[in-house]
Length: 88
Image 1 (cartoon, helix red, strand yellow):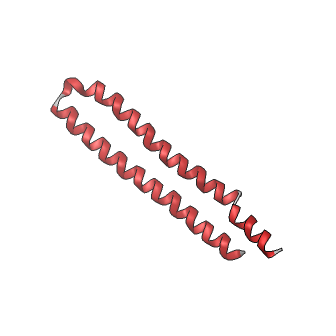
Image 2 (tube, helix red, strand yellow):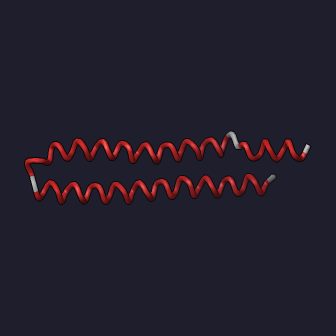
Image 3 (cartoon, helix red, strand yellow):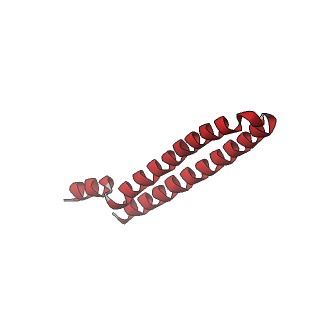
């Protein structure tokens, strides 16, 4: 049973870490492209800024979904319950 809990902890760490890494890279690319486009056409900057913030919100939602799934596996791990049923 300790092995399942250990592997779950490793999976949760990878899930949160890779989610944060992906969101960080995505926001960096998005911010860079926004700055390039705003420098190229300054009159479109307000419209592009609104669209950028919408996409940033969607990127954050992806990370929060990953955190939610990780918390589910941390505190309500279905694999431990299945292991307890098999062991009984």
